[in-house]
Image 1 (spheres, rainbow, N blue to C red):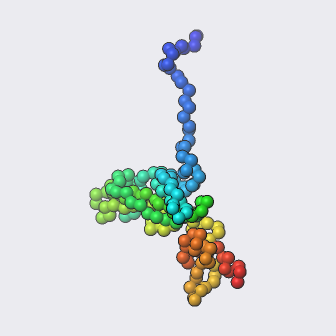
Image 2: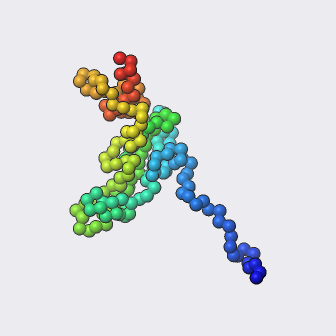
Image 3: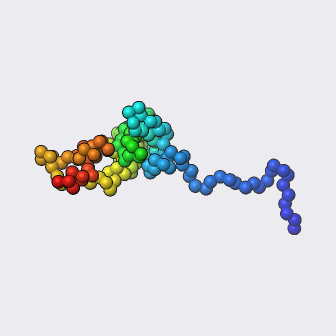
Length: 168
């Protein structure tokens, strides 16, 4: 038995393609799970605007559960996120999907992900950021964050670093 000879330029070739999903550098650095960075812009007054989109454009209808990939329109939503080398304004480009079930009363719906649930104003990782905890102190009977958290994260009474509680 001999070895099969192939003419030049034909026959088996080595494959140099990666076997795993390759993310672009900006998405790797920003590291928002299940999202990719579309664009990043330096803002004139400091900070950055990062525009992201979900990796998969499909979701189940909240009413009937039928999975849809048909895009009706695109919408943008600003959400808060943890700072990355300064202030970050995150803009999520979300698809408004058409429900594939004709009998469903809901005709369109927006995509949700574990990182950005329905009507979320901040990312899940910001909510779980260990630096932010609700602290048991009150200002005029209302829980209030310290100035550092208001300035750094743009938060209301949702959370605080506790620096005011430590200094008291």
